[in-house]
Image (cartoon, one colour):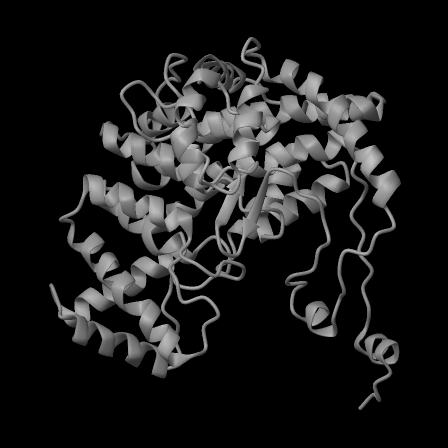
Length: 440
């Protein structure tokens, strides 16, 4: 997308908090260079210098207090690491390098005839902070198709050969590009082996984008499903650095483990039911609700069912978030997709009805800090509509998407020389002594 194209969007964007940042970033995009590595090679020294100066001036500045509750509460709210690619705001939701999801949907290049952003464009944005041109996104798509053939960690090999630490990022970049290229092939083969009797995934077409190749390998030919996959892989890519998968990859990578090991660790975290299995839990709950209440039900019966769920000590899955205090914008963009493409689908109508009722019930109950729906309240319903009913596979899709975010950050972690992560731990007795409490 040219700067002229961005300028035409300016009146709408100027109303946003981040409009100035958007226009500056777009203006500075290296539109003449399609090679992502070359763009990074230009950006990294500038960012290294900027951070060095910042640390020299403000390195001893206090940025917050730590309470005993934080230490016992999973470090919630503790400012403890630098994560460049995205920031989660409690009111606005996720911003990718400063851009909201609606802004990304407007600004990022799309497939010919498509309406949803290409995940390759988001990856370019996450890595560089710049809105890419169509040519730059096409370069990423073709590079992914080609590098899917590589099979060895460039970083691990270079490290064993004694490469200078200033060059670490270059090999982490190569590994990251290789891994992003391989993941759709691996994920599609898993799907085919489990659910399609081991049938072939076919060949990669270098003329197609990343998502299109992925849906072809999965065996889906519906162009709307491919559009959904472009949206899904974009919005699930990153959610700042404190979530389990992002933090795990950051932690393991800080030991100079190669990107394959770091990403594998992230996926082990994503497999946990408190992180990557939520959309399956939503679908199970929705199916049970449909079975008990039947077809279309009144708002009053729905409200009674929700209250009975809460009074039995259970939660309404898909509602609430550890950080967000408004409707998750990832939910909103999926809702808009459904309104456009499947407005009469019974399961979507059920989800839409819940959206009207659940927040008010949760507010009335008075326990929820955030009564609004999150991304998981919607994603499974969309996948099921297009025939992907194998719920146990949804976390694999999540993992393919999350690679874009965690690997982007891993490149910058090595480029900026981030050290081994080693927080101080304390025993309960030690904490009691620290705060002057009496043990026992």
